[in-house]
Structure formats: C-alpha cells, structure tokens
Image 1: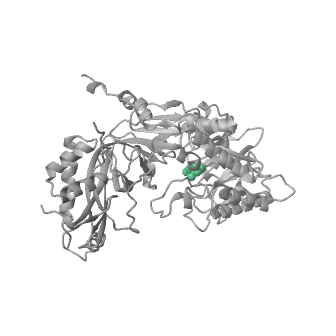
Image 2: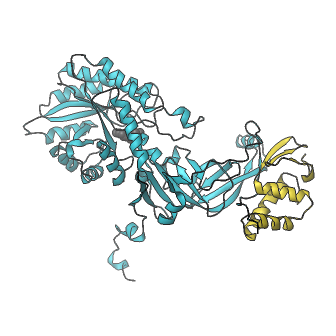
Image 3: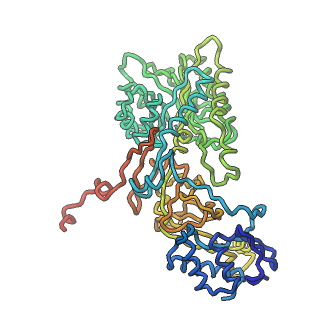
Length: 81
Length: 472
Ligand SMILES: Cc1ncc(COP(=O)(O)O)c(C=O)c1O
C-alpha cells in the first residue's frame, strides 16, 4: 500500500518518506518542486509552467520530462492515472 | 528579472541500497577540466567525442614507476609496450623519458624505428614474427625474445655463417599458483621444457642465450605473484648458467601492473585495491638481489609495463544525445523468473535513468573488463543515481556502463569517461561512425592534435573497386 501524494513526508533536500509503505525516496530538485506544487493541488500543466519559469528549460523538454515523472509517480501509487 | 536555476530532470529514486542518507542530495563529482583546459574548450576546438591525453600524467606515471625500481635496483630499463598505445606522440613522450621500445610485430617494429628508436633498443616479442621482420631485427641488433621452437629453428638457420653467435632470450610462462598461466606464450618454466630448450640452444653454436623473459598476465593485483615469478625466473637463469649456457645478462619481467581502473567484479574502489608500483618493484627487485650470487654483477632488469603507465592519462569526452528511462524489475522476482520458479509476468518495480552517448564500445574495448568512471562535465547539485550509459551503435550490447552513478543529465550535456588510456586506441575499430580525434594536453596547457578525426577518404582509402562496378 502506498500513500497518496499529500501524505508523503518531504524535506528540503528531496528526501521523501512514504508512511504507508515505510519506503524512502530521493527526488531531484525539479522532482521535489513538482511534488510540492502537486501537493498544493496544482494541475500538472500549471506545475510545468512553474518549472519553465524557474529553471532553464524550454516548454517541450519540461513537458516530456514531466510526463515521464508523472508516470513514475503513478507507478509508485502516489497519484492515480 | 530573476534568473532561472540550472535545469535537471524531475526524477524520483527508491532508496533501497545502503544506509539512508537524506543529505546525499547535493553533490555529484564533476570533471569540467583536464589539466587546466576546460572540457567545453576542448569540444569547441576538436568536437565530440574526443580522446584526451594528459602529458603531465604520462610523465609522472613513468617517473613514479621508474623511481620505484631504480630506488631498489641499479640497472633498470623500461621498454614502452607499443600495443598498449601506439600513438606516436604517446610513444615519444615515453621515449623522451628514457624508455626503449617493446614491439610484437613487424608493424610495431616499423613504428618504433620511425619514432627514432635504433634496432638495438627494441625488444622484439610476440608469438608470430615474420621471417623478413626477424631478418631486419637481427641485422639491426634487436633483442629477440623467442616464443617457440619453430622460431628458434628459423633463427638458428638465419644465424648460420655469422661471425659471432646471435644473442637471444627465451620467453617463459610460469605458474604463480594464483593466476591462470598464460601458456600460449613461450616455453613452460615449470615442467622442464625450458631446460630442454636451453640444452638445445647450447648445442647450436650460432645461438647464444643471454636473457629470460616472462609476462605473467595483465592487471595483476597481487604483487606476490611477481615475487613467485621472479624467483622462478632467476632460478632458471642460474640453472641455465650451470648447464653451460654462458652468462645470463638480462631478465625481462614483462608488464601486467594494474592501473587505477576498476574491474567489473571489483567491489572496492581502485584507491583501495591497486597496489602502488613500489610494491611490485619490491617484489621483483628484492627477489633478484636476494638470489643472485654476490660475486657477480646483477643482470639488467627490463620492464614492459603498459597499462599502468598510460591508462590514467587517457580520457574520452562524449556527449549525451538522448535521455531515456529504463524499467527495472524487483531483483527477487527477476531471480525467481530466471530460475523458473515464477511464471507470473515480471512487473516493473520502477525505472532508472539511461542515456545514449555519441561514442560506442567500439572505441572502448576495455569496457569488457572495466567499469570506467563517467563524470558529468557541468557541476550539478543533484545527487548521483544509477544510470545506464549506452553507446551510439546499433547493437544491444553497446553498453558503456550498466550502472554509472550520474545526476540527471540532459541532451547536449557532456561527460568525461576515465581511465581509457590503455588499449582503447590500439584495439578500437572503425564501425558505423568515424573514430574521433585524439589530443594531448601539454604541460604548458597547450592542446596538440595527435590524431585527426577519421573521414570518408581515410576509411575508404584502402578499398579498390573492380572496373565493372566503378561507373557512376
Ligand atoms: C609481452 C608483453 N609485454 C608487455 C605487455 C604490457 O602489459 P600491461 O599493459 O599489462 O602492462 C603485454 C601485454 O599483453 C605483453 O604481452
């Protein structure tokens, strides 16, 4: 059993603890930013807009990478498809 | 306007191995310059991929190794093993440092002569020496290390009619108890074969045995094996003299010292595993001095050290051309499936980073044995995560490293692969793409092109078109 995204415990260095499974994870800087934005209830499209605003990345690349990242979060059961 | 932070991909990595360290976030070792020249400049000038050699490292590896031996033994001579890296600039650095040449073919012999090495400063080794090459070697006074009986008989024939006997050395293979004996080369030093050959040589007046050679293997991590090999080689030398062969004036202990590379099965890092050259020197020199009769001058000691002198001086710069994710499976489940204990389809347990570089394993022959280190060029704040690094060839086996610790890299980023100085130039093959250029970073930080990037003209240069196919 995995937690939902809002239950995840995070620190500022990207270390994540899933209280339901007891597993630990490492998020990259941008991964952490996305998870935090999603935890605030932001939609993925909006969150990607923030990435483009804050990091040196173009929209297409950010979308490609974010799509893969969201798939990984689905696989972990943190978000639903 | 605020500035944007450097971008790395968003990823999440399950922490399943080792102690949990929430502070691992923050540092991936990077390599942004080589000997004070930035990788960015090297790529701008010479393109990617690019082999880079450090003249400083070449010279300091040589000096360090030479000093380790001369501190313990008076008459030491290094011979640069051309097969390890035959780029003329590299060979000439070693020749300038005082190395003579060790060659194993007519081609390498020609190369050494072209580099200004006189025949009498060439050690001629190898299991196949063409007659014409042997004739040239004899006429120029090269040190021939005889590999087999056929070669011995050819030499006996060629030496007929000489005024003085032809000096030769025998290549011997020896068991150290620890490693697989390289019995392909030379005569057996453990079962009496060498003694039998020595008797034969004594009976041929136009030949004269003056040296014994052994090369026990390569990447030998235990200096004790050299002690055992040296003890046996000295024993054979003294026995040969007692049999009436005349004075044995040199011993050649070949190559085989380990570099700072990391083998596939090697758990500990090279810093903890690779012995200092001093330990090899001690094993060899102390054994000879301890056994050699006190009233006789010590024999000259030759060393043909290859990879330990050049590996760490070589880098390959390559560029990321694509980033991918690769599914990974639960190791326990994968093992059960592999042993037929589980018929359920393998479920992805997660995924890991993968990248494709613009260089393939055709340039990196040593990845067969080594896990090279792969550094990002840009310093990166992300923690390194296991990353599969693919080459650019259309072959599934083209994996440069299965699990390199790397931060999230982007297309267009550069990486530096190290150490790659030994055997990769000489054993690389042209396949699918042109082989890259090679540069030498001089001690004054000047960058010298030492091999041009290949082009169509070079690759096709040796082809000949039959007349009926040559119309356009
Ligand atoms: C006869 C001989 N000498 C020297 C060498 C150099 O060996 P290494 O690179 O292990 O020092 C080799 C390598 O195969 C060899 O065959």
